[in-house]
Length: 270
Image (cartoon, rainbow, N blue to C red):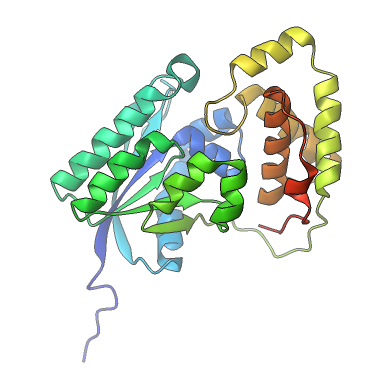
């Protein structure tokens, strides 16, 4: 007797904000956009992450939203050009994602959508798509496993994630199991403060003006800090370490005091 293991698989389409995905996996945004080879493996990674969450689906297509004009073509991936976030506060990106999400729902083009974005302006479109029968899942990192804690540092993103049918943790790059000596939250804060002390006043003003609306850092600041801390540690930063680094730097750029209470617990491994 035959038992087709995946006979009941449903279809899925992924809507990927390229800049958000680069932030999520801790890569340099420029490097990530040029890495067509990595994008070729993206559908398999997404499907594996969905399967871990109990969604056994077939990936019909990936839509790749980016402001770059030099992105290479990848089979099965449609590039959606959008304006740079700094030029319009991400409005063109949010509109493009919302438009495509609603089109998929209204035409019943698939059963599942995997959304990689963090703009809370998408909340209405996600809700409307779900009311039309579409299951909308959102790609997250380890920081989103505790939404109550996330809401204290990023209420907008936590609100958007609460709307998701499932929150999908992305498979990280394969690497051998190893013991990781994590840098303490205080050590990370100290490194970020040392970096900030060395930034000229004119550059501080420019970075503050480039600060993304919802979360994260300007690309240049993010690159500098990732390189600085990675050199100190002799390895790439873990997810929890990157989150503390970015939270600390963002508070500096916003002129807010550092809150040690947010980082009382040691970060967990990714």
